[in-house]
Image (cartoon, rainbow, N blue to C red):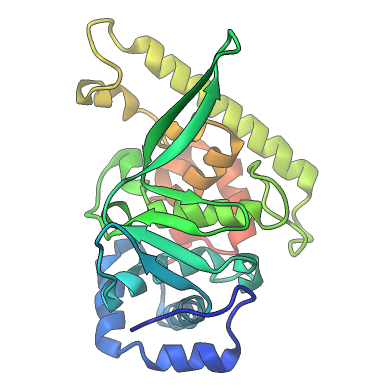
Amino acid sequence: MLGWLFARGASKAAAARMQARITPELWTQTVAAHAFLQRLDEGRLERLKERTAWFLASKTMTAEGGLVLSDEIRLSIAVQAALPILELDPALYEGWSEVIVYPGGFLIPRTDQDEDGVVHEYLQEAAGEAWDGGPVVLSWEDAAPRPADGGWRGGFNAVIHEFAHKLDLAYGGADGMPSLHAHPGLAARHWRRVLDDSFGRFVRQLEEVEASIPPDVDPESDAADAWYDELPLDPYAAADEAEFFAVSSEAFFVHPWPLKEAMPDWYGLLKQYYRQDPLAEG
């Protein structure tokens, strides 16, 4: 079986041993299953394979809810997790050791306080969760390869979303600002300005879309999709800056054109941070 080991990251030797266990057939099958990987050239795919092997050698994958973790599932999750750090220091994923995988959505306890100060506790179904200093939790139903889709739905990727949160959390809180210490050309003040401007404009766009939905249409139903399809990103990106960064990162790697067209400055920052340009590849 593929993968486990150290919160500090596997050694080069351990990663090399893991890479040798990834058969050419399984690797080819995995790349083919994820359309957004097929834009990478041969050299970048080979580097991605090395990053993927490092990830598998560095993290334990644990199944819950009766799921059986096959090599296909492990490799699929690992290659998606490795893509954001293809050109970054893998140490950004250090400090935690486990990926927990459920067969489908799982329940997370939540606590909210309303305007009257009343605290409400409830369970929310989730496709993924990234714990600060702890594991990444994923639903395989949502992490599995997906057929191509149009609009912002084509940018959905639960794995990249949660690992973008891990990058955001690596050296601070979840606020949409990953560490820029290895990016001397990226000033934190500039990042914050573009983030705030892009996030604010997206929130206003979502509010305009919601206001345009006729009163006889349930905004939570499929009937409202035609209005939400006007957006460049999943509406969940409006939750806060951390979710905006994570949702934008999904779109950046998986379905980048709507993001670049709507928010060219924000796309440019993501391109500088990740040191990748999906629209220039392939």
